Image (cartoon, rainbow, N blue to C red):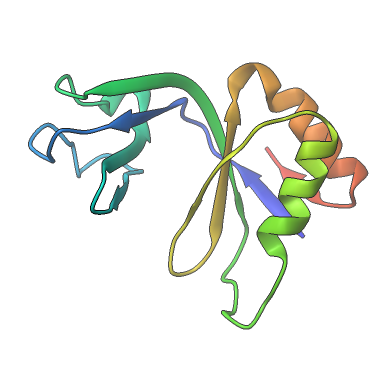
Length: 122
C-alpha cells in the first residue's frame, strides 16, 4: 500500500463550537457526536477558543481512493504501528484513511510501515 506523508504539523482539539474554526485551511477534519466536538487541523489553524488541544501530530494518508468493500486497511496499518509502540489517531474521509502519530514518533512509524511492506512517499 502506498502512503503519503503530509507536510503540516497538526493539532487535535476539543472544540466548544465551530466559531473559531478556519474552514479555509488545507486540512480540517471535524467530528461531532452527542458527547463532543473534535477538530483536527494544522497547528497554525487551531482555534483559540478550543476547550482542549494537543499539538505535535504528523499525518500520512493512504494514497488514492479506497473502495468501501476493502477490509482491514486501518487494522493492517495500526497493527504495524502498535508493534513498534506507536500510538495513533485515525481519521477517515469518503475516499481514504489518514493516520496521525506524534511528531517524535514519525521516524519510528515510517520505519515500521516500510518493514511491513508499505511504500512511503515523503
